[in-house]
Length: 332
Image (cartoon, rainbow, N blue to C red; front, side):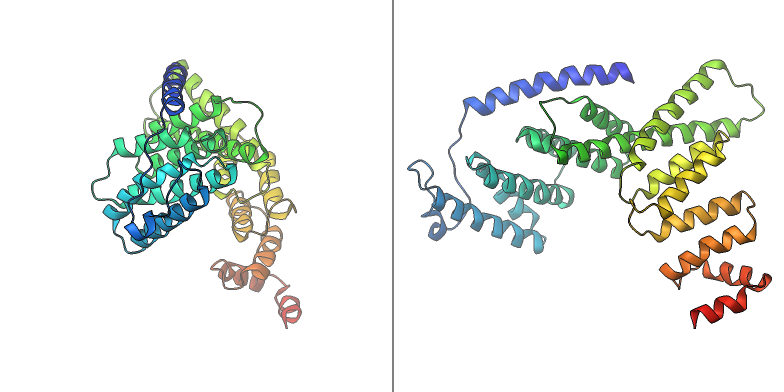
């Protein structure tokens, strides 16, 4: 897969250079598909930028209205013309236009009856060229789109390409997106490892050759390193945490897995998250931890979500212990 990634990197750089050269050398005639009463304000060639922006804002409102009414054909036609707003020289205006085009464009492509994979690829390729600040975000969301379409290999290649992208110093926002990209790529490594591990269990009586073991260890190493780095950052990392803990637990890393779950549940860097306590409880229960530890976790979960389904198990544990009466009094 590394050779494929290198090949895609070279191909990507080639096409980026071609399209950037085309963008610089051509400034198409600007025309927005709007009524004449609105179009009379449009004039970018004579320097009336405010008039052009008023026209662009009117176009954006009509796109939003078309999307709201699921008129995908009209929205697509208007969006084709709204692309011209990217020629606005104001960085702030261009940035807001990029965000609007990306959000609305992906929605239109997702729902338009005649949308194809080629349309999506073309749209994403254009958005990657619209300023370096949007490249990583476009790669990440395109990879998620591919995952939702069941194209895991294509998504992996997209994430790997994004990781290799270099263009000057990265902003804080770009670094955050890059962490997500690395996390999702590691998550796909975990899924590959899990799939191969299940296949091995299905033929447990067969001998495992050294090549298979090396391949399994490669995916384990890639997944564990990437997931470890991802979950060290503040945020909600539920699927990443579960995958990382499963990897550690499989290779007898009980103490390390327990520390990861304890940090996720109790460390102030992470926002309050009931799922973190659920994962910790299920992990402890799976390893036959004493009831005292289980009740301690469920007590905190009770204060976060009193109606959680695990409260039935909490109730059973309390009834089997001598602490049910003090607990009821403390809640009164």
